Length: 476
Ligand code: ADP
Ligand code: MG
Image (cartoon, rainbow, N blue to C red; front, side):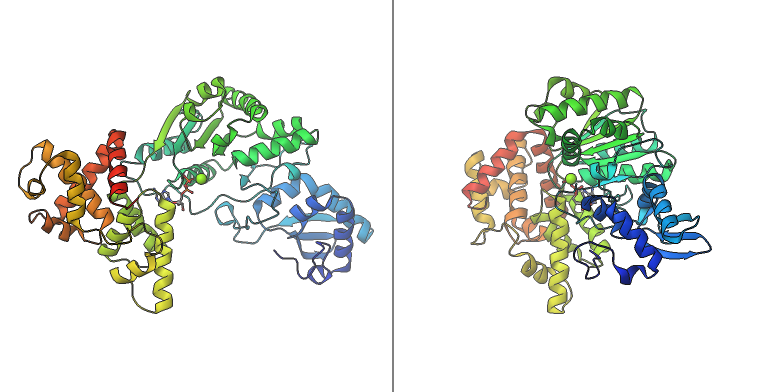
C-alpha cells in the first residue's frame, strides 16, 4: 500500500514533516514488533501539532477506537518525550468517515485474515491482549445490504430470517444458520445483518469474521499464550457472525473452542449468525453437540435462484455497474448462468468490458461474443430436434406430442423439460422456442422453464435426469 518509497516499512520523513513527530513514530516503532507496526502505524499521519496538542490522523473509525484504547498512552508518552512537555493527543479520522464508508483495502500481508469488522461503541476497557496480532480489521462491505439483495422464492426465507435477526438480535432465531452453495449470497446476507445492526444499534459491539480467521486467530492465540485474551475479546460482543463455518470440519480443537464461545454467548442472549456450504448435519466430522447447537435456532437455506430471480438480479447488477441491458440480453445471460450469482455478476462485467473495448452498445450479439468463452454452449450448436429426440427417448413419447395441445402430465412434464433444456442449450429466444412447440408464446415457455426448475428443487431425481440428458447431448 502506501509505503511512500519506504520499503522497509520504517518511518517516512516526507510524510510526517514535523521533526518531533518523526521522533515519536521512530520510538513507537522501536517499541513494537514489525508486524504490529505494519498493521497499525503504516497509515498513520500527522494532522497538526501545536500548543501542546498533537492531532493524529487515522484511516477510519475502527483505528480510532483501537488507538484510543490501545495506543493512546504510548503515543502520548512518546510525544511528551519528543517535545519535553505535556501533550494532549487527539485521534482524528477523515471528515466523511463513518462505518458505512470505510474502504480500507483488505489486501494486506498474506497471513492476515479475510475480514473482521469490529466496531466497539466505546474503547474496550481493561482488555490487555495485544489484539492487533489476533485480529486484523477490515470493514463491512457497505454494498452488501438488505436493500441490494434481490429476493425470490429461492432466497426469501433466508432473507426474511436475516432481517428478523438484524431487527431484533438475540430474540427470534439464535443461532441463525444460513447454508447454500458457493456464490448464492451467504456472505452478502451476513454483511447485510452487520450493516443493519450497526445502523440500528451503534452502541453495541459486533464481530464478524470468517471461520478461517477464527481458526487462525485461535491457533495464533494458542501459540502465544493468549487464549484467555482471545476468549475475552470474543465474548464481549452482542453479535457474533462467522462466515463459512464448514471450515471447522475436522478441526477438533477449534471446534471445542468454538463450542465454548458459542455456549457462553448464547447463554448471555447474544445473537450468533453462521453460514456454511452445507446443512449442519452434512458438515464432515462436525461434533454431534455442535451439530445440535447449530440447529437450536433457525436453519435456512439459499437455493439456486430461479429464472425470474436471476433476471431481476441481473437487471439490478446491470444498473449497479452502469450497463443498461435489453431484455433479450438479460434473458440470454440468465439462461446460461444458472447456478451462481457471482458468475452472473462476472457476466455483466464481461459484457460491459467488451462493449467498452469495441466501442459499441450492448446488444445480444455483443453479449454472445463477450461470453462465448465462459458459457457451456456445446461445441456444435444443438438444435431443438436433437434435444427433443433425447427427451422423448427417455420419456417414451413422440416429438409430435410435445408440439401438440395435449396437456396430460405424461406429455406436459417432458415438454417442459425439453423447453428448459432448449433454453439452456440453444441460442433460441423464448419466442423461437415457443414457435417450435406448436406456436406457443414466450410466456408459456418461461412458465415451462420455471415449472421444471421448481420440480427439480423438489425432486433431485429430476435434476439428475437433466444432468444425464445434458451428458448425452454432449453439453455437460
Ligand atoms: P457466498 O458467500 O454464498 O459464496 P456471496 O455472498 O459472496 O456468496 O455472493 C456472491 C455475489 O453475488 C456477491 O457479489 C453478492 O452481492 C451477489 N449476490 C448474491 N445473492 C444476491 C441477491 N439475492 N441479490 C443481489 N446480489 C446477490
Ligand atoms: Mg461467502
